[in-house]
Image (cartoon, rainbow, N blue to C red):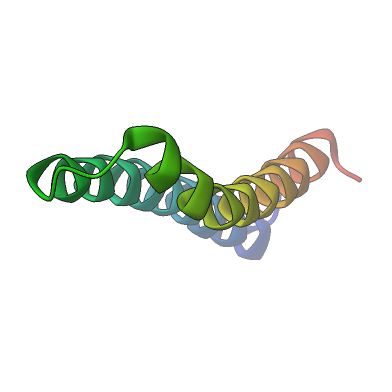
Length: 73
């Protein structure tokens, strides 16, 4: 793997970790705020679901890029 490819792989791995952390933080902070506001968890999750799905699809695409890079495709 060239140095450029190694740098890209490292940046890709860091981006994946940042996205995973963002997703987890978004979920936990939203649920915590909802609990304080005495909102129903199911309603909060229903509103949050589209954003979580978007994050999940982006994470899947990044992981696929990472897998492709690791297999040399």
